[in-house]
Image (cartoon, rainbow, N blue to C red):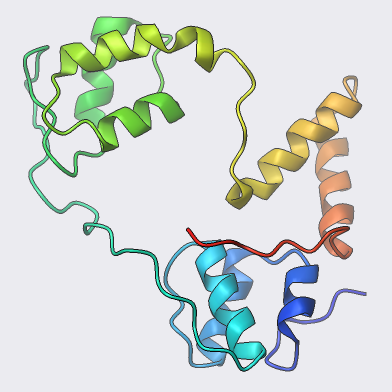
Length: 187
């Protein structure tokens, strides 16, 4: 039976079960630990504290969300992506206009925008078109999206299954211990 998230757990027992970020954040606060960061970072911090180990080195600080100048409408192909640009509604409107209704911010475009400082929006459009074949292939789903990974695997095993059936299977899955403990690695 799944235990309650508590300071009495060991780090190994914490890693043995599925926890939501909300549960982990509440436990971190209860233990007097910083509760910020992604699920992997909070889990590492709590597991170290539960085992009496020093806190893991934090990931390098990212620029504050919204830090720096963001592109504002109107934009065109010559507009240069500034450092810290987000996948904003201004960019979405531009890409929909240039690419068409099939445009969406997938991993390729999110990464391009995040790391595209100094490039133009016309180059971003070319990147979209150049990555479509690769984007059509199944992509690895990050560990932080455990539900998404489970659903994709479940539907591959049960192609006729319905979403309610998949979600019921997810609830059963997350209520039990992990088959192999997940130890979040450094970010």
